[in-house]
Amino acid sequence: MAIRKLKIISDTDDNLVLFNGKKADKNSPQLKIEEIEIDRIVQNPKQPRKNFSKDKLDELMKSIEKNGILQPIVVREKDGRYEIVFGERRYRAALQLGYSKIPAIIREGVDDKNGLLIALVENLQRDELNPIETANAYNSVIGEFNITQEELSKMIGKSRVAIANTMRLIKLPDAIKSCVNQGKITEGHARALLSVKTPELQAELCKKIIEQDLSVREAEKIIHKLVTNVSRETARVTTTDEHICQIAEQLEKFLGMKVQIKMKNKSSKIEILCNSQSDLENIINKLLSK
Image 1 (tube, helix red, strand yellow):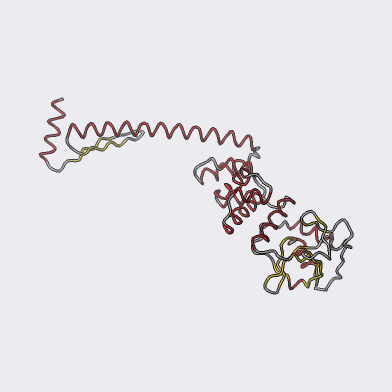
Image 2 (spheres, one colour):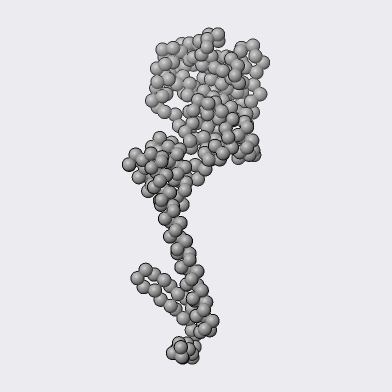
């Protein structure tokens, strides 16, 4: 592919990327802007964002062809190369357009933890992560760096409750998480489905939400009714089981033998376990005497 001329907007332009509330300054000891050879740049394996829309990437490529790269990406030096902290979509677009170099802010003093946090915050501020990506990012930060939800809350400016609610989405089956990733259902729908106990029923309800284009409120009503009915049925069965057990225990005391009662919708039976014909005769005599 032919090498394209790199176009960089002046660092006095308002389009220059902001970092920590300040414009990037070439003279800053921590922020250096350079044109970096694109083959020296590597992607961040811990990048929170996993899904990149092809349509949006195409739009960005057209914009870059016309206007150049308006914002440098942010990288950090690692193992003799430059790892992307954020700006991966700009990097991908430049790569596909055949750029040999790309403007980058080289952020010094960024370790793995800070790099992941910076990438997470940047994506959250731009609202570019879908709910599942956000949940996985939270989980990754908490797990890898051994911090609490409360500590993460202070770091990224989100409430602990919001973090906890989003992280619950990780428990959903992969098929439903895929629906969230694809935008077929919203985070509100996904949270409602967490109330359903079995993956099979979750999948069935998810399909219904999509096919009938249910709102979150409509889905919540259906799920609430379903969960309430299931709870009542479970309570009824539990009560019945306890009552049957009590009857079996009373029969065992009376007969002196092991008794099993098996209840079914159309047919039920009582089994008395005896070891000999003599035991059987004793049982019969006791029953007949009553």
